[in-house]
Image (tube, rainbow, N blue to C red; front, side, top):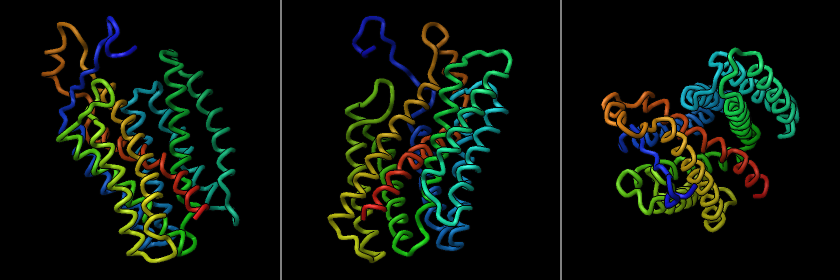
Length: 293
């Protein structure tokens, strides 16, 4: 239903714009620091630790924010899928992205069984789809484990992650000040923030490639950085919509009372979802671009 359709109701979040954007921008810096810093300090073990921390954070935030039914079971399935995806790409001598197919297949089966065995089965379809998307996200984030065994790959991962992080931070800061023209009704994200996010990602990729050295030229770095940044920015928009829906005020006479009560979720748990979900979407893109470079 479009915003101009008769009977259309615009979402209105109980979360103030500052709480929507600033925690997410700060957590983006932390997440990028983990993905770039830990591999520098601990090598492959550090990369595994950084990815696992982000995966488990996403599992907890996703189950809390989206309201998937069967809280404990959903947490267990999501965490198990994260660990299984990481092990599938770490244990083999010659790991391949196809190893994740087994994780996705078994994860899907586990989600169906977990949701069918719970009582009562309220919101079954929504919970099934939300849990499956969660498994896809944690599996996608594990793709970063396939890059980094060689110095050239490690440099590219660092550049790409910095580009994605720059896009997330720039997008949130610009949208805090100027969320115009609005991209989704009721969501505090605008076209200006999207454009700045892509430009920031391209600029950071050029600077990172020049600093890190290697064969990646300025033009190639700018194009690759822009692609990664665009993916991060668009998925961040979708994540913001999820946050707005989760914190939406009810309409009618109860709206003022709900506004006084404040948002139900911590801005930090909402921020984790807004940061890690876009990074998970970027991971397969980073892998594909790394293979093409």
